[in-house]
Image (cartoon, rainbow, N blue to C red; front, side, top):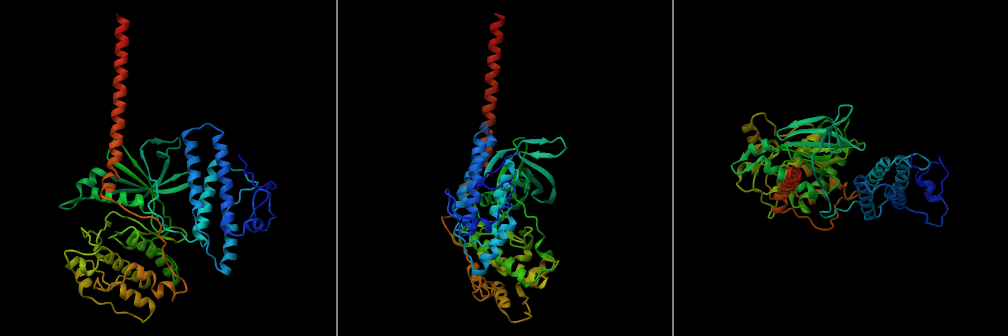
Length: 474
């Protein structure tokens, strides 16, 4: 077992933020006065410890990768803004961090569990009142070639991911639950051959949407959007594996004991993610519906499934693929439509369902559904800020429909200004046609080059053996 030395503490001693903040200054540091200082101190100890332990051992690729991971974590935490806390919030946050983070003083710890603590620190930041700034496209998505093996206990491993169970199926393929270092992931398995055969229109197949989805997910980076971590390609068949953030909460419309406060908080999460897509990434999701809004165990909401999303130059979308029940009137009547108002309409319908447990226009018959959306007016049950918001989101005229920025500023969302909500943008965001083209094909090209090089090596080896044999015979 490895021991993490922290400030000459007594072995076995528990260590909390309160003790840390009240401790006398030591020669090597100042006493931290904020939770951010405490987290930075904990994180700094982890980084120094792991780097020294790993670098003192063999410089294996696995260990070097871990060092890189820690260095990346340090940069991430160093870039975090200062906490914004109210008078009472500071005290409650102080207690919750002391309770929620496992302090490792005096406890045996392996290298792998050190990384779990870093994840805990990140969760503490995300859940305890730190305001996150939206950055430009800083993500690094790993591309790799699939290596499949079966463990001694019969479990299938795809690279470092142990496959646990199937989560679901779709027209694209399957989604499976996987685990790596005690962290769970959702692995989306796509059959490219089948997707290429599935025509969505005269000019588009499902595979082209997969290209676009990967290109977008490589760059979007927001706490209310499901993250893509890795793309794995199988050189022996047409399978593609997308390693995604695993959302382990209930389905949105099946939350038990939900009340208006729960709906309010979920909707704020939702609109932060959607406003980021619209105004920072310039992307229209185009398939907003409850099934594409996922929850984790803490009931934090994140937007998923960018398969039909549109990257916009002038807000006009090139295709109108989506789910009919969540499409606005203009989709059925206009040749050219704007993407952002389509998303706002679908978001309004989703909020309506959360509040009233029903869809206002639903019909099992496609023609009747279309007619309801075009002609039927909603009978509002009350006059309130919530009703006003729903009316503005579900305005049948897209030119009059509220924008995501206006939604964030609406009295119901902010509780009349007492709880303001906004994203703060830094950097820039851009997904180009070249990004889409190279989302998968660049990996395929690199794999082809590697295969060609291996064949050349084998050919050269065969030639060498042939020369040696001829020399021996002569």
